[in-house]
Image (tube, rainbow over all chains, first blue to last red; front, top):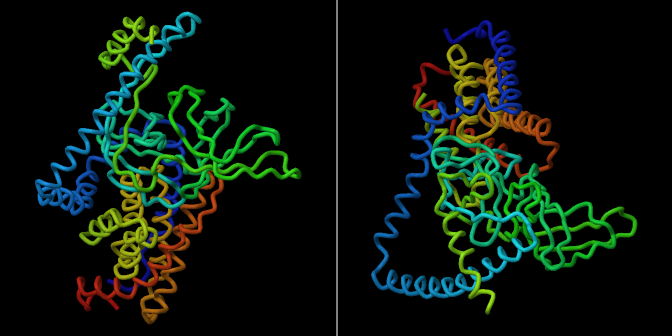
Length: 297
Length: 150
């Protein structure tokens, strides 16, 4: 039984190869396979949970073992940080109100607020040639393809694939990723490309005389509408001015801790912020109704 | 088929960053083993199924790993007779070749879809896969019992 060549393998190979290629084309060009992926995902989800179980048990045990003293110290530390941030937020609210009043004076379109949702890292994708992570939020929580993802330091990337319970986030450093940004110092518009290398980004197509320096902070410009404006993206690392090159050679370092962060924030903004998420809009109404105090300050 | 589930798990278990880059592709290794050991039962079809599972798990393009694993399984099937007679270290070299082809196919498809990329670290798992092969072979053979194999 073990001897001899398995029969009909050549034909099967051709069929399966064609099927794979067909799947890839359909999956790349359209969203028809989204439901197939979700359905298959239901089968593989338990596996994924099982794989991360030791880590979650470990984290849970650590929390259990942590002494009261440690917890108290952490609590006090967080409380003081919270108070500082609250104080800063007061000022922010005032500034935001003033800003919206001014933009109304200029008849500019008004900005609505943003809503965020905390997400946890499930897994760093093993797929070679890509920089991708999986997080524990999916379409069930309203996550959509193209949604911006940040961490406490800056932009992490965007959601590229979703299932009901999980999503894949393509990091800034992925080779297929590009993000419109601007230099915070002078508003110079740039596009920041991933290179497929960890902790390194590229800022191409800048003219030789462009005003960009080492240490400049690049923030999202809001162009293209995918990322809300104003979030830190990267810090300019090296600026190479070579007269023989048509453009400057600029590299940058992402400010988000792409390789180490385990908690992320998903952002809803602009049109994605539908009526179901009305609390935030109500919030911004309150802000707009109290610009006087802000103007006086 | 328990070994495939175990391999999928081994592929997913979170590892410290420094070690993760060297993690061998357990699923590919287990697939090669069964294609060599029981070619009548495990072949391109199983390869396709396992590849599709990987695609779903790591959110890659559906069919991406299915393609590479189908071809991998076919080749392992095709040459199972001579390869089974090789000493372990020679088998390991063949395994290196198969794993490299697997990564090459994945990289090639990636290049077609997203544009060419140069990432040397993608090849590290093939080396570790070759190193771990003799051990994996002995362990998996023990689970099957000697009579079924070589």
